[in-house]
Image 1 (cartoon, helix red, strand yellow):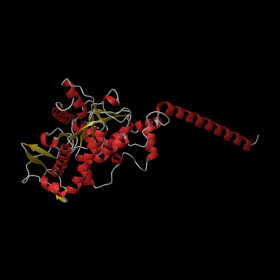
Image 2 (cartoon, rainbow, N blue to C red; image 1 turned 30 degrees about the horizontal axis):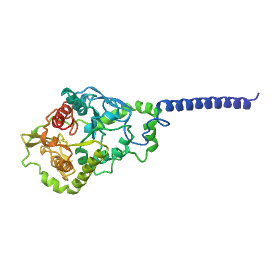
Image 3 (spheres, rainbow, N blue to C red; image 1 turned 90 degrees about the horizontal axis):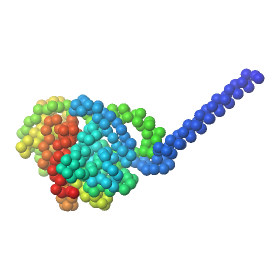
Length: 376
């Protein structure tokens, strides 16, 4: 047998080996997807952008001394314990301040709210459907694209913790992100596999540390502690309302629609306003932080100088909160004005938006006190 024939035989042997292994891999992948995935059977979430089957750990030591925390989302993308989707008493929706990705299981304000009811002998199943970066634009989308995919989904109350992201998206002046749209138009194949493929799920788990790193960049430390002083003139909320009138009108319409879609789902709406942590309320007066380094204030179009007293976007946020409460009262929903009645202190936040476990516990207690006589 010549060299040509030997090379041909060797090539055929390699071809058969590769073909057999590809066939075995195909069979293995198909069986894996059949048994563990949802491409062929089971709950198919299509190209919906929602984190499901998530188990991640974060090191929150540098944020608030929290050490290693655990973050879980189940097969429906929900956070928290519940017997089945038809047995949820309170569903919480909101952005990252509701999702609380760096707060350990059992210590989010949603979990603490459930504990408050349980300790009072009035047990409530509280489940968290918060999504980072969502404003009321995204909250409305979940009722069309996410919640209908959850079987027997019948929460009795839906609590919307809103305000900060609507304001921040106004400041950013960018097109809606994928969390607002609940789809990623140019990555549909990847998102479909992410949602429904067991093998892609393994790959996603392997990337968990990268995802954890990205989350830590978003949930950054604010640079405190700060010195707090009262500004020469109090923030003018009335002026902010006038300046932001078109945006507030649009925000009010979205809050009204949110109440409507909650009721269409068969639930009772609870609308809750928000605080930020770059100002302080003391005896009914507003205090601002003494600025360590100058920065550009996008909303007011001015440079905030080092050493000046900055109250953040207090006036603009309060204008949003006033509008939310007005719409809520007009719709005869349950309205809780956190921004008017709850006082946060140093240590309650690890940045200008997100609460520490202590801050989450304080918020949960406040919500419980305002809900215990109004829901059953």
